[in-house]
Image (cartoon, rainbow, N blue to C red):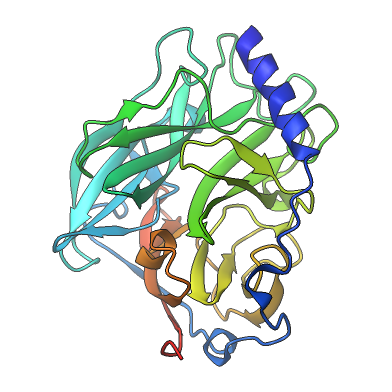
Amino acid sequence: MKHLYILSLMAAAMCLVPLDLSGALGQDVTKIPQELTTPNYRVSEIDGIGAEAGVERQDPSNVIKDGDTFYVWYTRRRSGVHPYASTVYYATSKDGRDWSEKGAALGKGTADAWDSFGVITPYVAVFDGKFYLYYTGTHAPDGFRSRGPNGTLRHIGVAIADRPDGPWKRFADNPVLSPGQRGTWDELLVDDAHLIKRGGKYWFYFKGGHGTIRPDATQWGVAIGDSPNGPFIKHEANPLIGGHTVCLWPHGRGIAALIDSAGSERHTVQWSTDGIHFTRAAKTEQPVLTGCGPFDPDAFTDDGWGDGVTWGVGQRRTPGTKVHIARFDIDAKAAPRP
């Protein structure tokens, strides 16, 4: 489609714009918070959106809290449906362990739209009383191709609502972030949005991949904008680090991250003071769940300090079960604000 080609060229042009934020906030880049070196990461099953015959749930969003209720969004489909042909559902909970599936949150786009084949991998942010649901969409009229020179392009869009239960309205007919030009590290896909508001800017972390990429070799980068709707300028330092999905949170005056199943830093906790350059803080004793979504309300406040995280969700497949949502707990609460 012509407009997708134009968007890809625009995204490639943005990649060339220098944006050096490596000195942000004047942090000591060598100091790793003590709690990140002993994370005690562990995984447990949950009810309501856990393993279920005939249903697959994966790629959960971050967890948000509205009033006394936790919300999570995720990719859902019946068994046998192509993963990229899934749609986004959501569930609620009072305690983060017993969940109630509420139904569909966002369906596929219209027949000729860029997200007509499926909508997956949600992430939800809250800015100025509005809820922003970021998602990955595809258009595959001749069938989906995961990789290769004619692989199906994957873009990220956003829908907006006044309430976490919706209704969700797509921001525009076009994506807010698209793959780069041919030959770049993200020429085929951008996926797994994760936003943090920091220093008055919207830091849009995302996974990228090229035409020959394997799931265990994907990397992620960041694009930065002045609005939650973009435009977002891809940072010149991309890609930042390996990872199959993106999972970050504000931690003290820096940024912490969990790296799941891709790259040399897989199954580790990472630390960065500038949001660009990451250092290993610890290797987890258990594998990090793919598609990990933390409960990280500080991601949206932009008050210069993050309290860290203690739990979240991710996707899991155990012997004899379909892919489903599980919970992780982690001892990563930041020290009190000085």
